[in-house]
Amino acid sequence: MMVNLVSQLSTTLASIILFNPNIEITFHEYSSDGFRRSEAYKTIENYLSSKSTEQASKLKADVFKDGKCIVLHMEDYEEVSDVFQGIKLSWSKVKSIPTTQVISFYATSTEKRHYKLSFHKRYRDQITKTYLKFVLEKGKEIAAKNRQRKLYTNVSGQSYSTRSKKNMWSHVVFEHPASFDTLAMDPVKKKEIMDELVNFSQSKDYYARIGKAWKRGYLLYGPPGTGKSTMIAAIANFLNYDIYDLELTSVADNTDLRNLLIETSSKSIIVIEDIDCSLDIASQRKKIGKKKESKEKKKSVMEEEEDLEDDNKSSKITLSGLLNFIDGIWSASCGERIIIFTTNYVEKLDQALIRSGRMDKHIELSYCKFEGFKVLAKNYLGLESHNLFGIIENLLEETNISPADVAESLMPKSIKGDAETCLENLIQVLKTAKEEARKKAEEEERLKAEEGIKKSEFAEEAVKEEELENLF
Ligand SMILES: Nc1ncnc2c1ncn2[C@@H]1O[C@H](COP(=O)(O)OP(=O)(O)OP(=O)(O)O)[C@@H](O)[C@H]1O
Ligand SMILES: [Mg+2]
Image 1 (cartoon, rainbow, N blue to C red):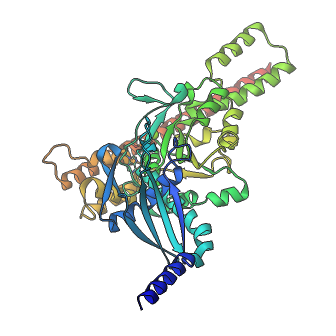
Image 2 (cartoon, rainbow, N blue to C red):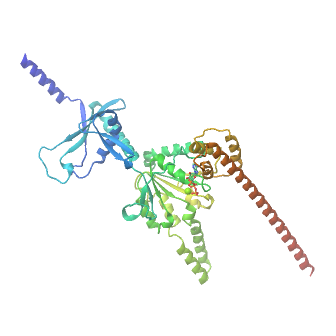
Image 3 (cartoon, rainbow, N blue to C red):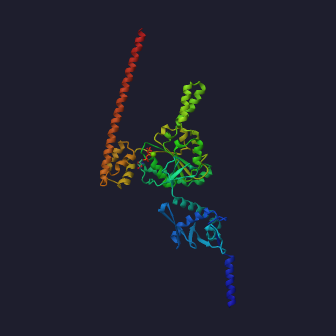
């Protein structure tokens, strides 16, 4: 009887060992030489963080963003489950300690960890081909969300704490509070921009398929104080990107520009503010024209000297240098990038610079209208409606005022300042702006009329002179 039981048990064990229906995949923490921490291990750790938080009984905490963000991971020997397309899987964290003691400077050589993934063998294809790719992508997304974002500049300054390699960029932590929620603009336009950004950030495969660098160019234009810089910060916060604020006047030449761009990382926005001022592109075009002219007609020594002085004063970056960069020749090396130009004078820009394909989308940020005002009133005063809103709506229709000026009027001028006082203050500002605009228009009319009179007097004079000349 006893012999029978033992033989039965051993048969069952043998069948379990021989016919184990599960497949196990291990992901080791360190590379086989023991020096490099595996990217896949870190990514899986990130992917499992939310599942660990929900399921594991022993957790380990990692603190990010100067203590503002805590991420929990499962401790050694813990196990969590996952479900993918209806398939049940399990992840466990295993620690192994070598039996022979090795004396080493590296802590890694004594304790070895790995994640072990188990699933039924009938799902081998789905797991190895689809699930693992999904885990790595999700893990990377989580890591990107948790990282401390940075604002880089190529202008060297004392306030910028850290300088990256080759001293090309210096950076500070990027903590601008702007968001699309607090941005005052037409809600339809806002939604369209947000949808497009999401679409862009998820289009890696699409860009790879069509053979284009994964980048998108935006031109933000409009009068001062309409929210161009605020929108850049909102985009960075929305997509969780770094910002590279490129000051073209501090870039020596095209090579310098290329080196700066090579150093930018993926998931970043490269910004050139006031592009019309930072690069005298229009005059470069004229200069090329002038050079052609000078070949045709000989120039005086003085004219040549004037041209040379002009050349020395202007930046050595050429329009073609900048266009090369935008076209992705230098930026195609890795990852997703957004390029944003801002300007107050869109009409001054060279068409080559802003044609579609380079600047894929042109966004006009304009004067504050009622929809924009409602966003500002909610942000600044916590108001969604008020009986003064009607008057403000009418005045905004008749007046050009920037969101920055509206925002300024809505800020309480004293601690006791209440919402109604702020709205009345804004009404006053709008009435004054309207009155000033009316006076300005009248003055312009008057000047035009005077010019007209002068011109007709001049014409009459000329006719009289001609008549006199004809008499003699
Ligand atoms: N559309 C807007 N929504 C919310 N706040 C705005 C908006 N526009 C301007 N502001 C407020 O006005 C301030 C100035 O705006 P911002 O710097 O974005 O303007 P800008 O268009 O970049 O101006 P400039 O052309 O002078 O660079 C911001 O700090 C913000 O508080
Ligand atoms: Mg600005």
